[in-house]
Amino acid sequence: MAMKIRWLLVRLSTLVTAVLRPGKARPGRFVRRIYVERAGSRFYKLYVPTCYRGQALPLVVMLHGCKQTPDDFAAGTRMNQLAEEYGFVVAYPAQAWRANVDRCWNWFRASDQQRDGGEPAIIAGITRKIMRRYRIDARRVYIAGLSAGGSMAAVMAATYPELYAAIGIHSGLPYASARGAATALAAMCWKRLGAAAPRPALPAIVFHGDSDTTVHPSNGEYAVAGAQVLSQTGEAGGRRYTRTLYRGASLLEHWLVHGAGHAWCGGNGTASYADDKGPDAAREMLRFFFLAERSEERLAEERVALAGH
Image (cartoon, rainbow, N blue to C red; front, side, top):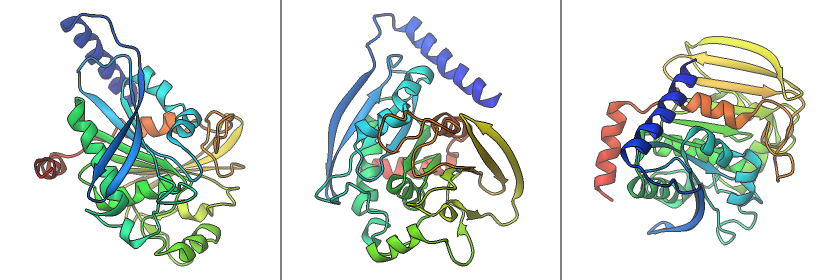
């Protein structure tokens, strides 16, 4: 119900803007841009929906997986179609082959796990550039990813918690699960030993298939001390799932999709690393995201950061 109310508010905002600023709406645009800073440069794709006429819209940053491009990821998740349906801007940073031959985000390197340097600084810079260029609602900026992209989303939550309101991790690993290529491979392939990872610094929704042979499903498990736990089972898109909700200091929602492998659930099965079966991960992430907003305290921190750029 809450999500429906938020979507109605977004659509109402669009309608009001159309009345106050009459004119022909521009078709949705999917454009290629480049971002350059001291930490490096990356191309990115940006989808601006048809409804945008200068009103404040949410922003969703999407980080692709290994051997993917922004176009692959957009097709597999159908996020551009959802942006048209619900009214938000989508950014797809692109990993460069010179940074990783398989175009994986380097979530496992110590130099790319810290603030103000490496790939986190570049991704944060892309996010801020879009926020300056378009009228983005600073309370509703989100980041999600698949596999290496999901792992990098966890890095972004740890390194730039003031910038995003919530994160989505699909088939990824927790922050600082590895400190190099060798330990990354071990973390991906084997069941996590010891205690579950600490919960992400931000509200998080996690998807993982229990038949994933690329990233072990245990990497989707987090420890949330003192949280109220509610577990539900169901079926969607031809696959069973277990959905676990944690209510504590920060929201966490975990989906274990039974029979699913290393692919985006409920997506476009003709695209790379996307499975047309199972719950629609993109819609579920949006539902979760639109219930989360940044606090005034974190907004103030981000305004200071933006002033320094």
